[in-house]
Image: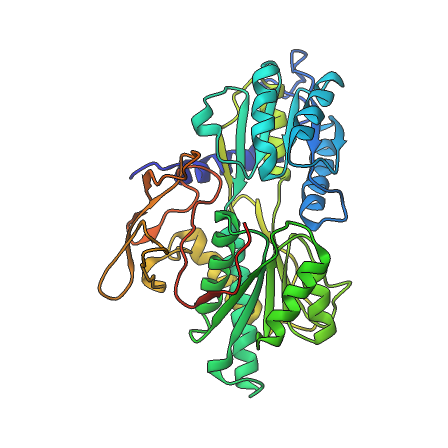
Length: 419
């Protein structure tokens, strides 16, 4: 069997789960006694926003949980912009004694890399980044999770809601159109909305989707306006990859079912909330803390999965989900776990190649993807460098942790583009 990063990650995930279950507040010897040589860890967290952002709140809550579980001190630097401020925040955390530091936003990466070079005795973790595997720094690491699995499962829930609406004759099958509010046209967002769409399509084959971008990770007004535009366009269900409550509240006001992200919005949107997917960062934090305590290496690229609880769904809403939702989602979850379902199975979607779209793709006579050179090794020119299609599916997050699925597949229409 070919051991890709994804396969290795699954193996490691099982080991991490065992380690986390055993506790991480102090290293122990074979007899279970505390090891006096265990290294003291002080954990620093840099976030783009604060707890008002669902994205950053997810990181903050997990950090608090992991620090408490491991008995270590947590120091936070919140509302740190993507720029030199990220380096300054990292340097301040080093001055305050932190020897394990994580930054949570894509634009923090270059500044955290510089900090890693300037403070080689400190371990730096960057969530969502792409450069650890090419930088070659022993103290700089990237981490992500296979959130496309969670998006796919949330899409199954959305598809069942569409089926219910069709069966109740609220819409016809050809009107099963979803809307999606995206932040930027980054691979992370494209991978997310595509996996969500494919999850819905797996149970509701007539589904289509429109995507509107805001050009910001957090802009409540823009996200609300984008959701309303999609609703006005005839979208009967809305999801999003954006960090505010803008889209969910627009859906609640309009009575349109919503699949949110990074946490339940049921308390604010009880009539329309279906489910939310999120990354659970606590297992990764705990693993890194324990590794540093015991003097072990931290993986260059870590990918958490549904299997190790790094990818989660919230509880389903009390009112909005369709009756078959839990059953269908559980069946899909088992398929992901046993390998009978691949999110980006090339037989489940088609691709149109034009002079300005999907130029690195090769397709068969039916439009199914046969080859794709992805930009895995980040560079200024975004050059394609790695073949990522084999065995009948697109191998997302196997060659680095951050997503690189950036294809535009048929059935999804982009209304606007903001980078």
